[in-house]
Amino acid sequence: MIELSEQERAALEQWLVKPVFHGKALSVTQLQGFFCAVISSPDSIPASRWMPDALGGEPAFASPEQAQEFMALLMRFYKSVSTALEEGEAPRLILKPQAIADQAPDYPAWCDGYILGWGLSTEEWLQPGNEVLKKLTFPILLLSGAFKEDAERGGREFMPDDEYEKLQQECMDVLPGAVAGIYNFWQARRKGTTVKREGPKVGRNEPCPCGSGKKFKQCCGAERTLH
Image (cartoon, rainbow, N blue to C red; front, side, top):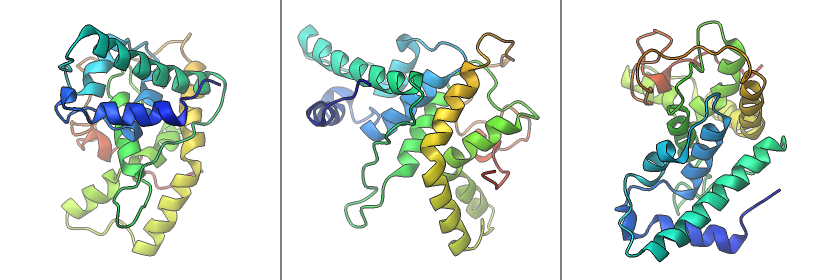
């Protein structure tokens, strides 16, 4: 399997916070989740489509040489994620701490990156009745914080804290396998018939395509089970 070395990963992290991206590029943690979704998509998403979302627009590179250096590193990272999924391996998640104070792994950032990449697909991921994919995507949606945010916005408690913490831990444990499962799910159907969305891509804060009326990130996964 192709993997970035520690030095290459550190170099990529340093690149993504450079002024050339105007503070809009995804972090390495977000980018890994983003790439997992883009590569897993049932439809082919070329770099020309995903790169603006990954980098926050057009980078202001100082020279062609600088652009070439960064792009080579970025595409090597993309290839490493792609190769792992193609070989049937659950991804080794890159999880930076959410904050210096508590050092908790930043699962929300990783999952937000995945949801952003998911939204680039022109195919319906969670069409009505697709319980298999709903269960596979549930850990991503829960760990993004979407369900809790929705409950708090409505003045409700999502679930008791101890129950929520237990569910979060379950989702953390199964997340790599779920990501690999989503890739395999779509791989098995790429030669079959897919249902295309009539409108443009759905962003995580836009209405869910299933027709529930809720935001995409707050729907299609509300079934609170991992089994």
